[in-house]
Length: 376
Image (cartoon, rainbow, N blue to C red):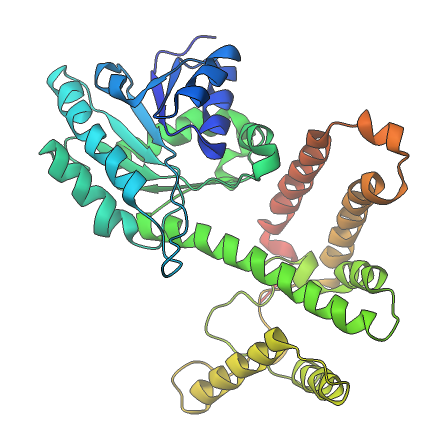
């Protein structure tokens, strides 16, 4: 079915190509815009519409997805915004023209934003270059991508969670309507419309959390290897035992330090053992420092004291159910890497694991959003 809403993508890197490919497959009229002629020609060769940014002014799009690269600055590690600023400057005249033609154009930011960056810089620049008011003359939303570089097209097509930070109601509702068919009748469980800054913050938490998890298990792996212990086997078993992996909400009630006997004792014991072995564990040391700081704040009544029995915990029955789901996913995830013959790996598309991943998380989220299994 051909859709009436015209779409455009500004910036056709990893994210932009994922967006362009997915919405093209969903039968939306969509055109990509870029400054790299070789990229434009490569996309055209794949049957995708793509033009140079110089032609953006003539676009009849109703909604533009901004997917402009925001690389890391080599000076201080901050986001390098020059490419983004150039793109926003080009979008200003386009907004003016579309409004003059009687339309309500909508801008949807897909590039990762630091919290409040839309409010502090992106929206003011769009308003300055167009002479218009965001949320009144044109719509604006931030919709974080959760794509992996190697599977961007498949991840965008099979997205497992949608967060829409909407400045105006019209743009938020339009995106939710466009994406509702992906989840069917249970779309309310997977699509969240929230304030702009909340959506921006959620994406930054995702990336820094993933980085923290990777570094944590690397740190534990180095420690276990130093003692001749099979680190991957220990880690894989820990994942199936740990409530923190089976219950994504575990420990996420911001403002509460961990207490009890086991967590403080075992963190201290591991650090003491590592020190005796002349092994540094900076991340675990930071974990204890942060918790000590939170305990001090609790003792001075600046934050709540630890809750006996924990918080946001699952019942044992629900944990067992989650453990079975994780085990099924684990079996599929590990086969290509450890047990499948090379010939078999070549016949198993990488995106099959992406589909398994999406099925697991959609199933898990359905269970997690059912409050009957959760303890206060």
